[in-house]
Image (cartoon, rainbow, N blue to C red; front, side, top):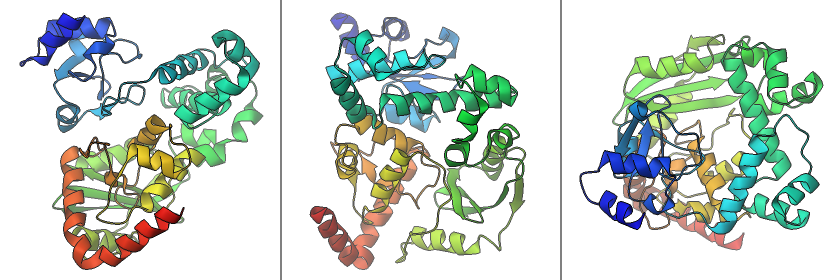
Length: 378
C-alpha cells in the first residue's frame, strides 16, 4: 500500500492506482488525492466508508480545492476537506454510527450498543457525544429523519415513508416535525405547499446572490453563477411553496448585504428563519460571534460551544449553513490557516475574508477587540 500511495503523490494522478485505493478504502492514500462522484456532486477521501460508486461516475483531483472549484461538495461522512486523519476513537464512533444507520427500524438502547461494541454504556455515550456532537439516540433520530425526508422526496406517501424510516407510529414523527422540518411531514412531502417565501436575486462581484425570507426572517442566502440556477435550486427545494419575487419586501436585507460587500460598517444581526438542530444552532451562534476580520478554526468553534472533540460535527454544521454571510461560516478556516472548503466555492470564501480583513482596521477594529475580549471571558 505504501508504494501505491507514494506513486499516487506523483503528478499526474494515475487513475487506475487511485481507483484501486478507493476500492480497498486505503487510509494511507488519504491526503494524496480526493475522488468526486458526478451523479451525486460529492467528493470524498479514498477511505470514505460510503458505498462505492461505479467507475464511470468517478473523477479524481489532487486537492479538495480543485474538486470544489469544479462544483463538487465535501462528503459529510469522511470530511475530505479536513487535514486530520481520524483517531482510533473517531473510527470507533464511526463504526457505531454505521451500526445505528443500519438498524433504524429496530429500537436501539444504550445497553444494546454497549454489548455490541464491548464498551461500558457511560464510556460509549460520552465518547460518541464528544465526537459526533450528539448522543447515540439523537443521532439515530437525526438519521431517521433524514431517511424519512429522502423517501418523501423520492415520491413515497407519508405513511410508507414513516415506516420505511423506522418510525413505529405517526404520532412519534408528527410530534417532532414542526421543530425539525419547519413544517408538517405532509407539507414537506408536498414540497412546502402552504408556505410563503419571498425572494430576490441581485448581482455582485461574487456573482449572483439569492436572498429568500419568510415572515419570520431570512431563510436563505446563496451564491451562484446564474439567476436561473439559483432560482432552480429554490424551486427544487420547495416546488409547491408559494414563491414570489419580492424586490421591495426584501430591500432592507439586500441593502444590508450589498453595503457589507462594499466594505461599509454593517451589522449582520438579522432575524433568521433557518431550521436546524440544536447543535447546528449552537455552532451558527458561535460563528456569528466571530468579529469581522477575524477567523476561527473548526476546533476553536468546537471548544467555544463546549464540545472540543466534535470537530467533524462542527464542519458538518458549517457545510449545511443555508444563510451565507449572515451566518458567517466563511470565517472558519483550517487549523493551519488554509481557507478550507466553502459551500459556495473557495474563491468566494477567500474574497469575503479579504474584504473583511481590509475593512476591519478602519471600520471594525474596536468591535473586533471587544468581541475578542468577550470571548476570552467565556
